[in-house]
Amino acid sequence: TSQFASQTAQLPERWSRCTEAAIWSGVLHSLLAGLRDFVAAWRLQFPESSILITGGDARLLIELLSQQAPDLAARIQLDPQLIFRGMQIAVSSQQNQS
Image (cartoon, rainbow, N blue to C red):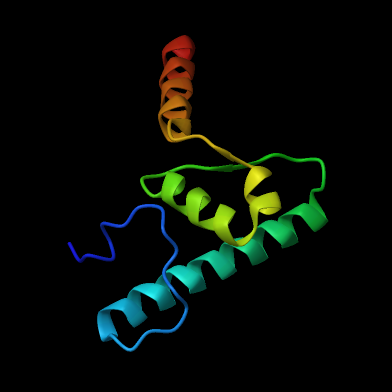
């Protein structure tokens, strides 16, 4: 694990002279730009819907996004258990059909 990957809530500077830091910065800033773009497009098409984020890095992404776009980050709900609830519903549904 690099020293950059272990930093959990600090958005790296956009520009760097160190290769490892530059790569880490490029990946994070590109990912956050894509997330901002996706959320903006989604809200235009579905303005009344909720936006949830899940997965292993969801909390980190929300924390970093809140440094760049706090209003946008506040509109996204963090749900680390979403996939497991979906799996539970699917299993219960199959059991009820049997």
